[in-house]
Amino acid sequence: MSKPTILWYRQDLRLHDHPALRAAAEKGEVLPVFVLDHDAAGDWAPGGASRWWLHHSLAALQRSIEARGGRLLLRSGDSGSVLAELCEKTGAHEVLCSRRYEPWAAAQETAVHGQLADAGIELRRYGGALLHEPGSVLTQGGDPFKVFTPFWRACRREAIAEPRRLPELSWCTDASSEALEDWQLCPTEPNWAEGWEALWTPGEDGAQERLVDFLEQSVIAYADQRDLPATDATSRLSPHLHHGEISPRQVWVLCEQHKAVHPDAHDAVEKFQSELGWREFSYHLLHFFPQIPEAPFKENFADFPWKNDKDALRRWQRGRTGYPIVDAGMRELWQTGYMHNRVRMIVASFLCKHLLTHWREGEAWFWDTLLDADLASNGCSWQWVAGSGADAAPYFRIFNPITQGEKFDKEGHYVRRWVPEIAALPDKYLHCPWETPADILEHTGITLDETYPEPIVEHKAARQAALDAYETVKLSKAAAA
Image 1: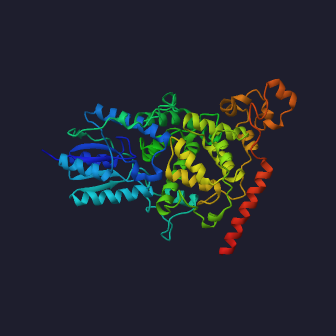
Image 2: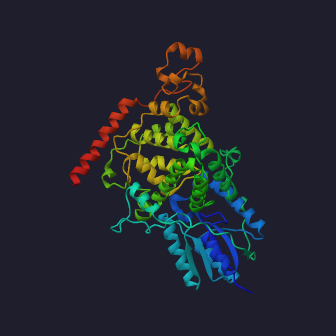
Image 3: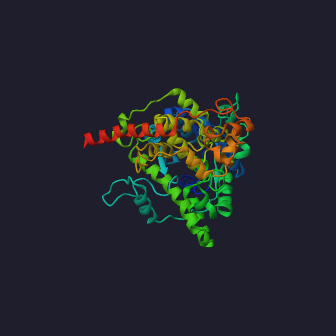
């Protein structure tokens, strides 16, 4: 009897365009296993929202493998120990996996490699999570890029091969599995994710359907409407990409095909593809600068005078800041596990620059509540907004939450959906309720600080306080020079 090859599933929960799976299939029988090993990730174990998605994504993968005559093994514990035990019981002498790029995951791969090598078992890693592996796109001097535009220009010069067809699969099923329900990844009391199954379809099929729908129905307007949170103009592929239910190469190739068939959508699709580029850029940065999730990329920000007002943080988390566009975003996040990208920038800027709360507080909240919580994108994006990251927004760019709301939610559909207690206000006052004349407030039945809170800070004063705080960073940088 031939010995199986173990496919160690990680953040690659799909069958198609899966280099490690293809390599395993070419060797013979495949034994697919997912190991729940939260201890390896430490502080970066999946948050509550990601755990919900993981449960449903694993269930979808189980169904897909079972439909092809196989079975996905579920095990919990130390990854190296679990894999070594499976190899001993099944006679497997190779474990194949997809590469991950988080610092803890790289350390895990090194540890598992050593544990398996001690037993005479080989661990082989494959790409598939990115368009280009870190280290393959560098400056002419051989250094990592720190600015997006030249990085993406260099990426675009590199060819991207089309995904190959899924090969015939032969499965090994001679091993026991734990029950997914026993892992208790989904919330119960209270079930804060109630209703999410009507909003999302985790799994490879859901990812493919979402991409096709986006290209056929929404992408034509993407460049013009992507910043409008009340409009369904974005792909919402980020949770699928994060959990590896679809590869960026699959997304890229379908986009290229769509441009060829629909030349009128060319510019819009290119704009969308550049967002894949930002995801790519974040992972390359994380690979070369693994401190990004925890320490400022620009070292002179280490002594930034954060206030870290816990009460202000709680009001921000609960969508009770008194600024409707900010509160709408935070409530959308809590109720759906998602937030529109433009609004993410607004709420992040508000936390860091209006409330002078450390970006790591926001990063931690997003990590627990976002379905697409991604260590690379999350850390790089928060540092970008705070001004401490690579290719970051300039320190003096402080979003005005009033004008941002008026510009990107002009008719108030987004705010009225998520902040219904002020829905009766006229458009003129929707994004600044405190300016509403008393007779209109009385007519609408709104009492500020009862129906809806007064602003937690005054915008002009908060902006000036932020600029003053950033002056200390400029002085620190000058002194260091």
